[in-house]
Length: 212
Image 1 (cartoon, rainbow, N blue to C red):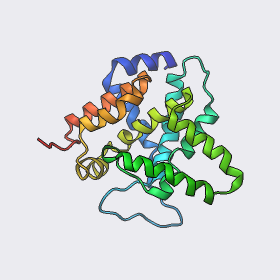
Image 2 (cartoon, one colour):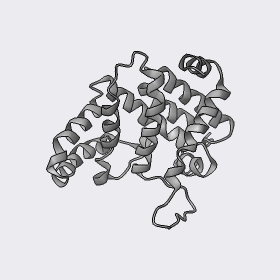
Image 3 (tube, rainbow, N blue to C red):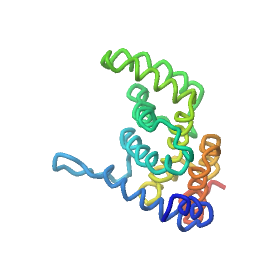
Image 4 (cartoon, rainbow, N blue to C red):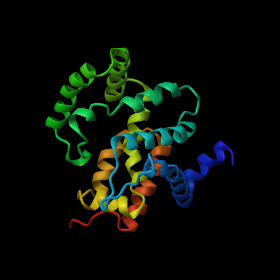
């Protein structure tokens, strides 16, 4: 199948989108493969920030082929932006998107001071520049990374253990998902299309809590 045929099927065929999403999610298997001959035992599904970043790297490799129609974006920079974009959470921990407040956002900015102070000086200048670029969406690459960041949790939550822990335990609704993701994905038609199809499928399957 050519790239143009793939683009066409994504826009016209919901089942094709879901199958592509499942194939991408197959690569998420490394998130669950524990090193040192050990196992992860948990009753409630968890995901580390680093595992989220790995998922973003996988998705960016797929979606850049669809979205960057003129092959103009700097893929190496995209990878660097992804690697550093959540580094402040070393200090703050992860805050669930639909509960994030202005106070949380201010604390994240303050956390950067400790982050930069504690990392090797050799990395500091590049890390600071990349984090600011992504946060402020200063480039097309940064906007793409922000869209990938918002879309990635949908792929993470495509099975029962994931959606129960993320959606139901946190009262995360379809309306929350759309409100949080759409402002960042709407300018990237293929990412946005995947988000719409997966959201609709999750609603059909009862993956979102019913809070009414």
